Amino acid sequence: MAGLQQLTVLSGGMGGARFLQGLRHGIAAGRLPGVAADAEVTVIANTADDLWLHGLKVCPDLDTVMYTLGDGIDTDRGWGRRDETWSVKEELAAYAVEPTWFGLGDRDVATHLVRTQMLDAGYPLSAITEALCRRWQPGVRLLPMTDDRVETHVAVPDAESTSGRRVVHFQEYWVKLRAEVPAEAVVVVGLDEATPGPGVIDAITDADLVLLPPSNPVVSVGTILGVPRVREALVATTAPVVGVSPIIGGSHVRGMANQLLATIGVDVTAGAVGRHYGARSQGGVLDGWLVDESDADQLPGLHEAGLAAAAVPLYMTDPDATAAMAAAAVELVS
Image 1: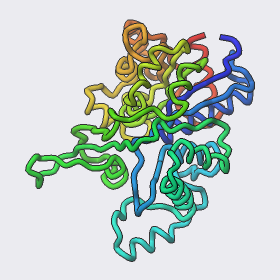
Image 2: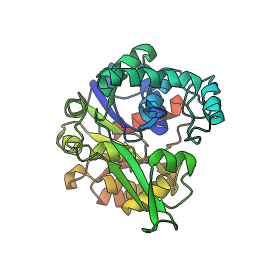
Image 3: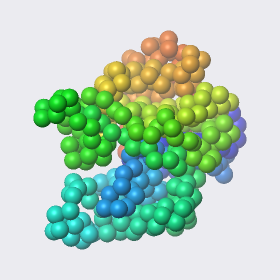
């Protein structure tokens, strides 16, 4: 596998963005064995977290990747702009405009204004994302998984409803409810009818290596895989496909994978998530799966499931540590 030139990553927001930081760092520093120094990275980003808010189109995962790689992210929060102010949010609250649980920062709102204006002018999301990236120069080609409207909703218990449940947008579940109530089901509206965004299928079929970072397997990577033809492209590509576990020691590092994995009947373990994705030799989408060194006891089960697997440190504490993860992913299928 010498001279890998085209790398494709299926990414959610914070976890995927941090992985991409380390991947870029590893390429630039020559720390990825067999990867060309001028290798190109294409990111297929989840857009099912998107929402319309105060008349603006907000794309949290696209923006988190763009801001993170463009050195504009608030590193403490892991989302939104650095040195943000909140005058717009405060003024909307003074008018009692709902929702008040999701705030748009003053700097961040400019991105959403530009995106919405371009959508109104007839541009597709893929072209808009390309235009926004001209400012941020993220060092990757950033592709929305689809130009179509797709939104993740979560069914939660509601004693006042005749059905005993209600359905809320994913962002309400995560931001307002803080994923503290049981998730009974995940419903991704529009996914079955969506078309892969321009360049998405080619980015998979023409890749030399495809990587699944430690993003949420249900509402990030899972929704990308749910776009028609994407899973089939992963199964068919000649490139090795390697994933990195978002579960360490029986729990997510950040996010709500613990809550959502139960909705699809998957145990909250690194091995169970790897087997959920499955080996390509047995109808799944992976060739290799990395787990944390603390989960080394799960390697035999993964090998039995047909996956190449290794246990390495998976905490993304800094770009060097994350570059080492990416290097391990390459070495796993070398």
